[in-house]
Length: 144
Length: 144
DNA sequence: GTTTATTAGGATAAATTTGTCTTATTTAAA
DNA sequence: TTTAAATAAGACAAATTTATCCTAATAAAC
Image (cartoon, rainbow over all chains, first blue to last red; front, side, top):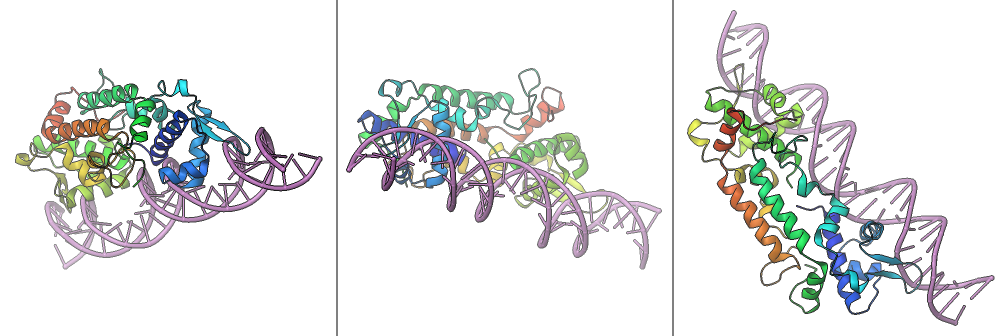
């Protein structure tokens, strides 16, 4: 459904958010370890997230990644997915046609539209805050 | 959502089904042309579909691909997707965890489960027959 | 100011997916 | 029986995604 990069990006953002809620800034090594992802590849993804203003990065010793507490609830899943995988998953044709739309539909257009709309709605409504708190209280997990 | 191979596979199967409903066997060149896909790559995908008993292939002059009329309605989208992309899209974890399940859920487990279940239900209920007839009467399109 | 721990960025490499090419096999028809 | 037109299969190539490595830039702490 999503690319590996996007999966790591979502996992990383949730972990950073959880730590930020507790007032902690976290570095690359810790993030990779806690979300069980390749370190250098994760670095690239964190760069992308920082460029898209989803997370903040701080250089130097004691540096790392964090999210302003007041922003955590306004970051939704869709922001991460769009930043890393583009919004093709939400708007593109299920059979890969370029001109597919209601007036020139592919055979599965209406069936897929419903699925994609559901995915888009869920991704727009699901905040990183709720995902981070679920993790914080031990209801959910980020690795294995 | 699906791989290119899967997209071509679905498009090809719908086209073959439509022609089979009209009693026509169709060959690789015609299929590629009508679904606007790379010829040699499409050949590989048709082989996969034939091996998975989704379509029949016939060698020799006048050979080509076809589907038994009586089978067309029992072939569902999910059969093609599972054959080409595996059922990971229907059952896998949205964040790529291997052990993700209700008792050990990733942070988006329950949100994604609903989406995936919807996709699975739709794919199980949507028959190639209905997709082929929509194409046949000009309501839907397979290229551009 | 120097050292050191961190992120940023660019070059490169490995793995996977997408796509091509060539030869073998099959079979209808002349 | 020969020819020709089709699919099957395997080797190869290109493109994309995933992943690594090295150097530069930044900034805290001594």
